[in-house]
Length: 250
Image (cartoon, rainbow, N blue to C red; front, side):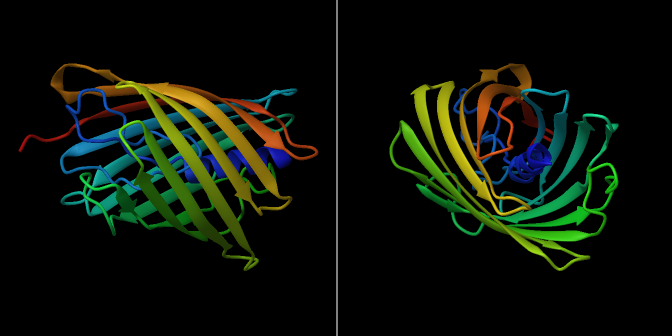
């Protein structure tokens, strides 16, 4: 189950929005495993798809997240729907997350941003098939982002998850560095630690790039290879695709 522990962490962390439309392909927030601390701007919605498949088996994971600003950048609502496929137990829905994020520090113009997130984990996945926890859970996360200069940004995460049935608390830590090699291309290096079941440590080098299209649509694909450090954990190919666009005109 170590691979699915890593996949669960991937879904938990992949809740990152994009900048407002029309920013000339500047990629401000499209990380894979480490959450960046930028909420969506007013009038802009984002649709995020992720896919991960581990080596040495048929297991894979798909997640869809949709993010909506609530009357501006300060408040953001989102949900995450996972679909999991396990060797020998088929494909099915995982535990759905309902998320709220508050932009505590930062407005897109200063180097430091802080955006605490609170989530409810709904027991929509089958516990017997290894796709869910079997009980309502709670998550609290603290993403922090700091832009060092025009070419380099850093991000850090700290978070806890409470299992509503057992009362067990799991901890997560993450950090990343994003190097802007071109206005529309970023190289990324992420690392994540989680205490869920057996300890999971992931190292995730990757690349993302952006296309700006008519009407304010921005498309951001990305790819990474996840190295799972530790006995019994599978490395995995990670794919990312985001669509961000205005849903109203001011």
